[in-house]
Image 1: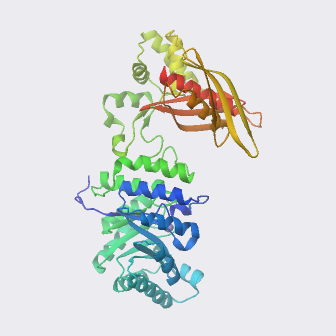
Image 2: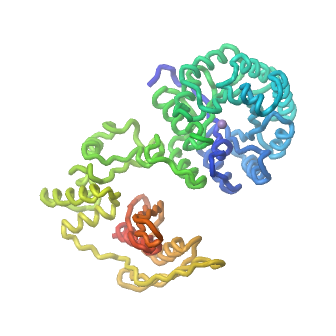
Image 3: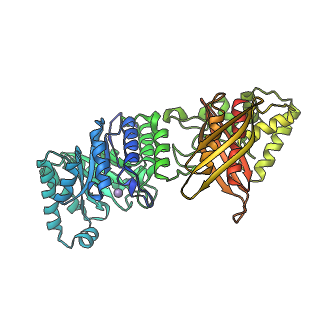
Length: 495
Ligand code: MN
């Protein structure tokens, strides 16, 4: 813990504006509203819902978000143009983030005007927005490559023109923690209004630069969920919140227990995957495989975890692979309700390591199957696939019919879906609905060999209540591989 006490700071979320500027990302109105709802539940202070001038769809989304009555301040991005302010105002936002170029590179390439003219136009825009009842955050774009005296003049003028906050933008991510600290110390002495920082992660320093801005006296940070954003992305909200609270002793109003869920939602809707080793929200952030680590973790979780996963709404996960040790296998067998003699244990462990050595991901179903083989446990499969028919094509809603044998009785069901795999899985889910409510949490597909005749491997993660299981299917037919994985998983979940 730091010795700074529990100083608080505000979180300005720009997932829906700078985050949406991630290459390849474009969100629908409905998707933007879903993310805004999640951000409000997370309790961010400001939601930058978009840049109103961008498009009609963007205006519709911002308007809808502004009308929801969220706790958070709803903001739109704007350039130093009255027309941008007018469009934002028509969307019913509380505030505008007015961004003014501040480096000579930006001023000359974008404006073909002098510094004085830009300052004048910036200040007139601030006054215009203020006069129309908007809260104003005034941002200096590319401030980290600008003449510092010019940035100070811009901020002083913005303060005098009635802005509520000023934001120092490290637009191309070239700040360092030491520099950031000094800059905000200066602002703290010279300015009477709230200061804010906007960092990018081009050198992997966005989180620490944001924290050092707070240390220097900043009242607010800009951040995005999962650190999405242009190029290497923006400062990551979950990292700033957790690092500042846990390591530096600051406080935010963020409801940390929702961090993981919001991360998953944003990843799903934007299609931007989170790296498995990403801090706080990556798949492996609370996963342990190595035998030595899992053994210690089971005795005392603090041995290899800086915080408990529950704080950010997650669960610890132990996985088996070639690094597995006896303790982790024992723990998993115990969970399954199995007992093994020392010899059987050795056998199970060596079979597990064998799969791991082949470079394969070991699923829960694999572990169960190995244990049951070694322990000679015969388990009836409660669900058996007898027949599957899938029809799909151009101008045709993909439709599947299945015949299942469930506890010895035949069940026939049909389902439709967005694609043939979706239709087949929906049909199966309908078929088993009387015995279990199973949810497909994740679906991964890999082709193991080359061409269109490749062997396809599907790994699914299924849940029933809070029980979670992974299972695999491998076929040349992607639909059959998917169905095999799901049926295998269902049998393991309900077995
Ligand atoms: Mn930016």
